[in-house]
Image (cartoon, rainbow, N blue to C red; front, top):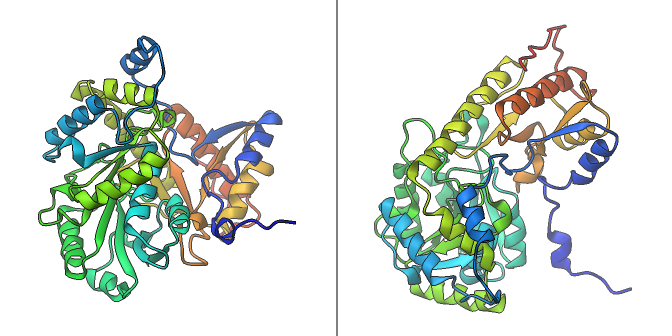
Length: 410
């Protein structure tokens, strides 16, 4: 019998989607499932953008240029300019979601055996893209007790060796929701210049920042023209995950030319997705302000509920729409599966992402889960009711709640 590739065996199942069959089985039994495992907002995709797609007068759905629709790239230049990032259309390559953008960057910057330093926990798909590119992720661990802040630069420097080729950040971070300051980026920038590395920053959640810390893009940091690569997407910003439109922006012409060669192999990113994305960029600033306000309210509800739960360790995320939480459980994979297989409260349960899948270091994340606060406040409260009861009933809980009654708030 022919054998599958070794590379395929090295790809880990997605912690975000691997329990999907259990969720489907729960729904088939009649159980309502609240999906807090995946960054799929319940906010409506902007109507004006959807109408633009519906009314598009396109007699033939042709290929588009491999680097992306020119009119859309011009709109992106305008968008970034409003955020004090000056680019040309030839600095931008439209990708099939941020996922392809990350993969194109990896293929263009990393060779077989190269290492890329990534703070963990990190977005699980980074590992798969690294494996596909023949590279290896070198994790640097962050912890909930420090609000998942970046470790000292000296800790990064200790990991650098002859195989190190790049540092990858996600800012604001998925899965933790932490945000890196201008000072953080400048310090990492000095490091990549010192060792002649690439600095790839996933800025998909750049519009979702809360509190007093201003967002700074890697392309705003001076002196990184040859080093900095920005990854972006409309998926979360405009609640358009299915459009599959992202982009990669870099002022490094050699990297851009390399990515374009790979992009030409897949011909072009989705036509209609680019039509929708271009229309969405015409939305007034109040649209995103309104969306951000909704997430701030959801964040406040989630934090309040988690703080009321005995022996749950949480923090206040500064961006994105995730909270990476430590629970009083023995094993997050077993707990998340148990929620879908054996637990229900008033005919309902919830789906979470096990923390183990967001680490490269074996053994970490056993007590942690990622919660995506992408549901409206009513559903979010109902989901938290389920979680609170589940933590009282779970056979593998590691602490006793001493008969404390749950604080149902829905």
